[in-house]
Length: 264
Ligand SMILES: [Zn+2]
Image 1 (tube, protein in one colour):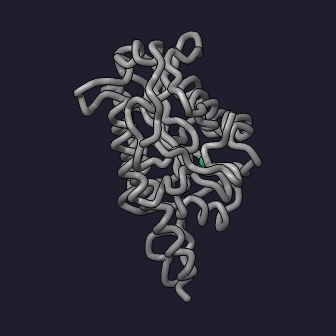
Image 2: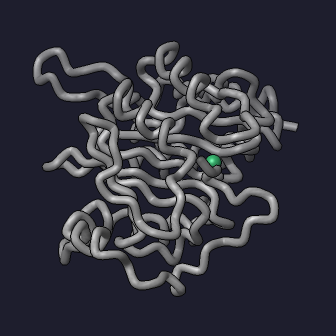
C-alpha cells in the first residue's frame, strides 16, 4: 500500500490522462455519480480543493474519507493524486461491514491512510475523517511533547468535550475556561505503520477528536463530515495561535491574566 504522500521519485498521477474505464468500473459508477453536491464522492472533491488552497493537502499529501450517511459505505480519496484535481470517479468505495472494496478505480492506489481512517470509524463511530499535512500541526508537534494543550481561547468552544448534557443527551463542547488536549504520536516511515500509535491514542484519550502526528500532520474526525470540517478548522486556528503565543513566550495553556508574566 502506498503512502498518502508521494514516495521519493514518484510522479503525481496526471488525472486528465485516465484511460477508458472497464465495463466493471463503469457498472459501479452509480456509487460515485450523483448530482447531489452533498454526496460523499462530490464532497471529498470539493473539500480536497478547499484544503489544497488552505495549504493543508499540497504535494499530494493528506486525505479525506467520508462514510455515506445512508448506505454506510466508506468513500476514500486515492493515494498520490493532486488533491485539487480529484474527480468523483477517482474514489475508492469500501463496504463497511465486510471491509472489502466495492469500487476500485483503475490507475490509482488505495490511500495508505485507509487503516487509520478505519480505526476512527471503528473506535469512534466517526462519520468522516480528515488528514492534513498542516504546517501548524507540524510546528506544534515540535513545540509540544506528548500533548498539545491550549486554554481560555474562544475558539476552543467549537471542539467537543466528549461529555453529554445530562438532561437533553446532547453532545457538549468545551467551554471558554477549559483546556483542549490533543495527543501527539511519533511519525513512522510509512503512513500505514501509524495505525498502532493512533489506536493507542484513541484508547488513552477517549474524548479527543484529533491526533497530531509529529513532523507529519494531523488526523481529525467527527460524527458528520460537517462537524469534522469545523473541528479541523478550529483546531488548525488554535494550533496556529499556539505557535504565535509560544513565539512571544506565552504558554498556550496559561491562566487568564498571566500572559504578562511570560511576555518577552
Ligand atoms: Zn500523511
